[in-house]
Image 1 (spheres, rainbow, N blue to C red):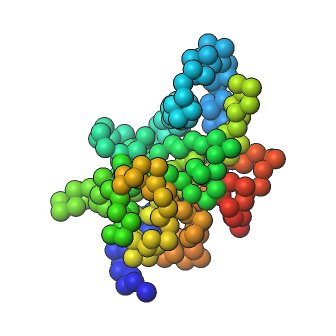
Image 2 (cartoon, rainbow, N blue to C red):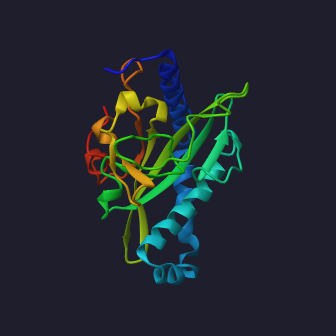
Length: 242
Protein backbone atom coordinates (compact mmCIF):
# COMPACT_ATOMS: atom_id res chain seq x y z
CA UNK A 1 0.00 0.00 0.00
CA UNK A 2 1.33 3.42 -0.95
CA UNK A 3 2.25 5.84 1.81
CA UNK A 4 -0.63 8.25 2.38
CA UNK A 5 0.74 11.71 3.12
CA UNK A 6 -1.21 14.68 4.43
CA UNK A 7 -0.58 16.40 1.10
CA UNK A 8 -2.24 13.58 -0.83
CA UNK A 9 -5.19 13.59 1.57
CA UNK A 10 -5.60 17.34 1.13
CA UNK A 11 -5.50 17.09 -2.67
CA UNK A 12 -8.24 14.48 -2.69
CA UNK A 13 -10.27 16.50 -0.20
CA UNK A 14 -10.28 19.52 -2.51
CA UNK A 15 -10.99 17.34 -5.54
CA UNK A 16 -14.14 16.14 -3.81
CA UNK A 17 -15.14 19.58 -2.53
CA UNK A 18 -14.76 21.09 -5.99
CA UNK A 19 -16.72 18.24 -7.58
CA UNK A 20 -19.61 19.05 -5.25
CA UNK A 21 -19.37 22.75 -6.10
CA UNK A 22 -19.42 22.05 -9.83
CA UNK A 23 -22.36 19.70 -9.42
CA UNK A 24 -24.30 22.33 -7.49
CA UNK A 25 -23.56 24.92 -10.17
CA UNK A 26 -24.99 22.85 -13.02
CA UNK A 27 -27.71 20.97 -11.15
CA UNK A 28 -29.35 23.83 -9.26
CA UNK A 29 -31.35 24.71 -12.37
CA UNK A 30 -31.46 21.52 -14.41
CA UNK A 31 -34.23 22.75 -16.70
CA UNK A 32 -32.22 25.85 -17.57
CA UNK A 33 -29.26 23.68 -18.55
CA UNK A 34 -31.35 21.30 -20.67
CA UNK A 35 -33.17 24.17 -22.38
CA UNK A 36 -29.82 25.72 -23.22
CA UNK A 37 -28.42 22.49 -24.62
CA UNK A 38 -31.56 22.03 -26.73
CA UNK A 39 -31.64 25.64 -27.96
CA UNK A 40 -29.89 24.52 -31.16
CA UNK A 41 -33.17 22.97 -32.31
CA UNK A 42 -34.84 26.37 -32.74
CA UNK A 43 -32.65 27.15 -35.74
CA UNK A 44 -31.78 23.63 -36.89
CA UNK A 45 -32.94 24.18 -40.48
CA UNK A 46 -30.22 26.81 -40.88
CA UNK A 47 -27.25 24.66 -39.77
CA UNK A 48 -28.15 21.00 -40.28
CA UNK A 49 -27.00 20.76 -43.92
CA UNK A 50 -23.54 22.13 -43.15
CA UNK A 51 -23.36 19.87 -40.10
CA UNK A 52 -24.22 16.78 -42.15
CA UNK A 53 -21.50 17.54 -44.69
CA UNK A 54 -18.82 17.20 -42.01
CA UNK A 55 -17.21 13.87 -41.14
CA UNK A 56 -18.34 12.03 -38.00
CA UNK A 57 -15.37 13.15 -35.89
CA UNK A 58 -15.95 16.78 -36.85
CA UNK A 59 -19.66 16.45 -36.09
CA UNK A 60 -18.96 15.28 -32.55
CA UNK A 61 -16.50 18.13 -32.06
CA UNK A 62 -19.04 20.66 -33.36
CA UNK A 63 -21.72 19.25 -31.06
CA UNK A 64 -19.36 19.65 -28.10
CA UNK A 65 -18.54 23.23 -29.10
CA UNK A 66 -22.21 24.14 -28.98
CA UNK A 67 -22.54 22.60 -25.52
CA UNK A 68 -19.47 24.52 -24.30
CA UNK A 69 -21.25 27.83 -24.91
CA UNK A 70 -24.08 26.78 -22.60
CA UNK A 71 -21.74 25.73 -19.81
CA UNK A 72 -19.73 28.96 -20.05
CA UNK A 73 -23.04 30.71 -19.42
CA UNK A 74 -23.94 28.46 -16.48
CA UNK A 75 -20.48 28.81 -14.91
CA UNK A 76 -20.41 32.61 -15.07
CA UNK A 77 -20.20 32.85 -11.26
CA UNK A 78 -18.06 29.76 -10.60
CA UNK A 79 -14.65 31.38 -10.75
CA UNK A 80 -12.43 33.74 -12.71
CA UNK A 81 -11.75 32.50 -16.26
CA UNK A 82 -8.09 32.03 -17.16
CA UNK A 83 -6.71 32.60 -20.65
CA UNK A 84 -3.86 30.04 -20.55
CA UNK A 85 -3.62 28.37 -23.99
CA UNK A 86 -2.95 24.93 -22.49
CA UNK A 87 -5.93 23.47 -20.70
CA UNK A 88 -9.49 22.23 -20.91
CA UNK A 89 -12.51 23.80 -22.62
CA UNK A 90 -13.26 25.80 -19.48
CA UNK A 91 -10.55 26.95 -17.10
CA UNK A 92 -11.24 28.90 -13.92
CA UNK A 93 -9.33 30.17 -10.93
CA UNK A 94 -11.07 29.77 -7.58
CA UNK A 95 -9.89 30.62 -4.08
CA UNK A 96 -8.32 27.19 -3.65
CA UNK A 97 -7.41 25.94 -7.11
CA UNK A 98 -7.17 26.32 -10.85
CA UNK A 99 -10.01 24.20 -12.21
CA UNK A 100 -10.18 22.64 -15.67
CA UNK A 101 -13.59 21.44 -16.89
CA UNK A 102 -13.77 19.71 -20.25
CA UNK A 103 -16.94 18.98 -22.20
CA UNK A 104 -16.90 15.49 -23.71
CA UNK A 105 -19.68 14.38 -26.05
CA UNK A 106 -20.32 10.85 -27.26
CA UNK A 107 -22.95 9.28 -29.46
CA UNK A 108 -25.06 6.62 -27.81
CA UNK A 109 -23.98 4.10 -30.46
CA UNK A 110 -20.28 4.65 -29.65
CA UNK A 111 -19.76 3.17 -26.16
CA UNK A 112 -15.96 3.34 -26.53
CA UNK A 113 -16.26 6.97 -25.37
CA UNK A 114 -18.41 6.27 -22.31
CA UNK A 115 -19.55 3.04 -20.54
CA UNK A 116 -17.45 3.71 -17.46
CA UNK A 117 -14.60 5.47 -19.26
CA UNK A 118 -13.89 8.83 -20.83
CA UNK A 119 -11.10 9.94 -23.22
CA UNK A 120 -8.63 12.44 -21.75
CA UNK A 121 -6.04 14.37 -23.76
CA UNK A 122 -2.63 15.65 -22.68
CA UNK A 123 -4.00 19.16 -22.03
CA UNK A 124 -6.71 17.90 -19.70
CA UNK A 125 -4.86 16.07 -16.93
CA UNK A 126 -1.82 15.89 -14.68
CA UNK A 127 -2.24 12.13 -14.18
CA UNK A 128 0.63 10.14 -15.65
CA UNK A 129 2.27 6.73 -15.49
CA UNK A 130 5.82 5.51 -15.99
CA UNK A 131 4.53 2.22 -17.38
CA UNK A 132 1.85 3.50 -19.75
CA UNK A 133 3.98 6.25 -21.33
CA UNK A 134 1.67 9.07 -22.37
CA UNK A 135 2.30 12.79 -22.19
CA UNK A 136 0.51 15.20 -19.85
CA UNK A 137 0.79 18.98 -20.01
CA UNK A 138 -0.92 20.04 -16.79
CA UNK A 139 0.96 20.43 -13.49
CA UNK A 140 -0.05 19.08 -10.10
CA UNK A 141 0.28 22.65 -8.79
CA UNK A 142 0.40 25.99 -10.56
CA UNK A 143 3.14 28.27 -9.21
CA UNK A 144 4.48 25.31 -7.26
CA UNK A 145 7.41 27.05 -5.58
CA UNK A 146 5.73 30.42 -5.10
CA UNK A 147 3.59 31.93 -2.38
CA UNK A 148 0.52 31.89 -4.62
CA UNK A 149 0.68 28.13 -5.26
CA UNK A 150 -2.66 26.53 -6.12
CA UNK A 151 -3.80 23.04 -7.02
CA UNK A 152 -4.62 22.04 -10.58
CA UNK A 153 -7.92 20.11 -10.56
CA UNK A 154 -9.55 18.51 -13.60
CA UNK A 155 -13.12 17.42 -14.38
CA UNK A 156 -15.22 16.22 -17.29
CA UNK A 157 -18.85 16.83 -18.16
CA UNK A 158 -19.74 13.81 -20.29
CA UNK A 159 -22.77 14.29 -22.55
CA UNK A 160 -24.23 11.24 -24.30
CA UNK A 161 -26.64 11.92 -27.17
CA UNK A 162 -28.62 10.01 -29.76
CA UNK A 163 -28.92 11.12 -33.37
CA UNK A 164 -31.73 9.92 -35.59
CA UNK A 165 -33.13 11.54 -38.74
CA UNK A 166 -31.37 14.85 -37.97
CA UNK A 167 -32.77 14.91 -34.45
CA UNK A 168 -30.34 15.11 -31.54
CA UNK A 169 -31.59 14.00 -28.16
CA UNK A 170 -29.51 14.22 -25.01
CA UNK A 171 -29.67 10.88 -23.23
CA UNK A 172 -27.31 11.31 -20.28
CA UNK A 173 -25.01 13.83 -18.60
CA UNK A 174 -22.44 12.80 -15.99
CA UNK A 175 -19.86 14.82 -14.07
CA UNK A 176 -16.53 13.07 -13.48
CA UNK A 177 -13.52 13.99 -11.32
CA UNK A 178 -10.15 12.96 -12.79
CA UNK A 179 -7.52 12.11 -10.16
CA UNK A 180 -4.70 14.59 -9.76
CA UNK A 181 -1.27 13.34 -10.79
CA UNK A 182 -0.15 13.24 -7.16
CA UNK A 183 -2.72 10.50 -6.56
CA UNK A 184 -1.04 7.96 -8.84
CA UNK A 185 0.22 5.99 -5.79
CA UNK A 186 -3.45 5.49 -4.84
CA UNK A 187 -5.06 4.70 -8.20
CA UNK A 188 -2.10 3.42 -10.23
CA UNK A 189 -2.52 2.02 -13.73
CA UNK A 190 -5.87 0.36 -13.04
CA UNK A 191 -7.77 3.45 -14.18
CA UNK A 192 -5.72 3.95 -17.37
CA UNK A 193 -7.07 2.68 -20.68
CA UNK A 194 -5.99 3.01 -24.30
CA UNK A 195 -6.18 6.61 -25.52
CA UNK A 196 -7.43 7.98 -28.83
CA UNK A 197 -4.05 9.45 -29.79
CA UNK A 198 -0.98 7.36 -29.01
CA UNK A 199 1.35 8.91 -26.41
CA UNK A 200 -0.88 11.99 -26.06
CA UNK A 201 -4.00 10.68 -24.35
CA UNK A 202 -5.57 7.93 -22.29
CA UNK A 203 -9.03 6.80 -21.34
CA UNK A 204 -9.88 7.34 -17.69
CA UNK A 205 -11.50 4.00 -16.85
CA UNK A 206 -13.31 5.23 -13.77
CA UNK A 207 -15.49 2.11 -13.53
CA UNK A 208 -12.39 0.25 -12.27
CA UNK A 209 -12.18 2.51 -9.21
CA UNK A 210 -15.01 5.05 -9.17
CA UNK A 211 -14.61 6.35 -5.62
CA UNK A 212 -12.55 8.88 -3.69
CA UNK A 213 -10.42 6.35 -1.85
CA UNK A 214 -9.21 8.73 0.87
CA UNK A 215 -12.50 10.46 1.70
CA UNK A 216 -14.62 9.12 4.55
CA UNK A 217 -17.38 6.93 3.16
CA UNK A 218 -15.62 6.76 -0.22
CA UNK A 219 -18.05 8.94 -2.20
CA UNK A 220 -18.14 8.49 -5.96
CA UNK A 221 -15.96 10.46 -8.36
CA UNK A 222 -18.94 10.34 -10.71
CA UNK A 223 -22.21 12.24 -10.31
CA UNK A 224 -25.36 11.88 -12.36
CA UNK A 225 -26.60 15.19 -13.71
CA UNK A 226 -29.24 13.82 -16.08
CA UNK A 227 -30.37 10.39 -17.30
CA UNK A 228 -33.19 9.83 -19.77
CA UNK A 229 -36.07 7.71 -18.52
CA UNK A 230 -35.54 4.94 -21.06
CA UNK A 231 -31.97 4.22 -19.90
CA UNK A 232 -30.50 2.55 -16.86
CA UNK A 233 -27.42 3.93 -15.19
CA UNK A 234 -25.37 0.84 -15.99
CA UNK A 235 -26.05 1.50 -19.69
CA UNK A 236 -23.92 4.64 -19.41
CA UNK A 237 -21.35 4.14 -16.64
CA UNK A 238 -21.37 0.31 -16.36
CA UNK A 239 -22.47 0.34 -12.71
CA UNK A 240 -25.16 1.82 -10.49
CA UNK A 241 -24.50 4.81 -8.25
CA UNK A 242 -25.85 4.08 -4.79
